[in-house]
Every structure is written in structure tokens, then in C-alpha cells.
Image (cartoon, rainbow, N blue to C red; front, side, top):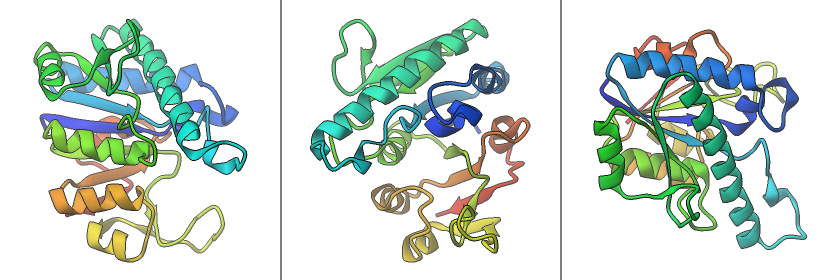
Length: 231
């Protein structure tokens, strides 16, 4: 693969602390990404904001404002992880769909392609820039826009199951599942908007557990222990 979009779960980056950052976890991610970049792979990254904000659970905050707080959480995540990547010897840039002063650059496909051409890891922060759209949707949207070959979905759970494995000890993991089945059975790999975008634009996904040893490198090489979502 030449170009991929890596989606990192905010919760997975928090490790056992469940909130904030677990730096050893982020360093492990950085070392894996550097291995792939050194081999010539172009990597875009989206990070969820769940290690800081789950605003939809509060009925006291307007949904639009809650989603805006979530967008800011993803920007904090991307700036932090970007700096860890730099400490490991990579060049990075953080792009957002709205102005953030000098903190980030404004997203455009042309700008992203220019950065990829210079060997940079490109972080897509701030979601889509609009409320009611999740980082799942932002992930698929950016993957389609930058013409990624696949989405690497690194989660706190190690694949796609037929039911919630946290609630059902008998839940069965798929080694492969079609996006049509994901939509039909509402398997919640990503949210429904993102799933339909994947289907309509034929964007495959590889779903795996972030905490497994060398999981990102293995997934990028097709040696996945999680679930392949086909289109």
C-alpha cells in the first residue's frame, strides 16, 4: 500500500487511564508509523476525542456546542500526538477545516498532497468542521478525498463482533465482513453515515486492536488479526 488513512481511537491512546494520554502507548504508535513512513508509505491520521469529551451523554449542553467541544478535543489530540511523532524523527502537519490561528493549517486536498510529497505525516483534526458529523465520518471523508487505498481503524477493541463483546461473552468476531452486512446488521464498526460513505465510494477498512503488538505495521502489510471490511 502506498497511502492509507489511520484512525486512532482517543480512548485507546489513553491506555488504562481511560482519559488524557498514555505517553508510552503514543510512543509505540509513533515508532510503528515511522517504520511505515521510512518504507515510503504516506499516512494521514484522524484521532477521536473520546479520551477528553463525550458530550452527547449530557442533556444540559446543546448538541451543536457539544460537538464543537469534541472537535477541539480532536485538535488537542492531534497536536499532542504530532509532537510525539516529531520526537521520533518524523515531519508532521496538523490540518483543520476551520482556522485555529497559528496552531494548525487550513485543510485542503492540495495542501495535504503537498505535505505527503514532502514525506510528512498529515493529521486531519477538527472532524468535518460541522456538528452532527462524527470523527468516523471525518475519517472516511478524508480517506476518500486524499484517495487512500484503505482505512486502518485502530480501536480499543480488536475487530468487528456480531454483538458487543463487553456485554456479551459469547460475541463472535468476524475475520471478514462486507460493508453491506455492516450496514444491514448495524454492526457499528463506524457510524451509519460513515458506513454508507464507505459503501458508496468503495473504501475498505481494516479493523484491529491498537494495543496488540506491532498492530499498525501488521495491518498496513495485510497481516491483520482483526477484521477486514470489504466493499
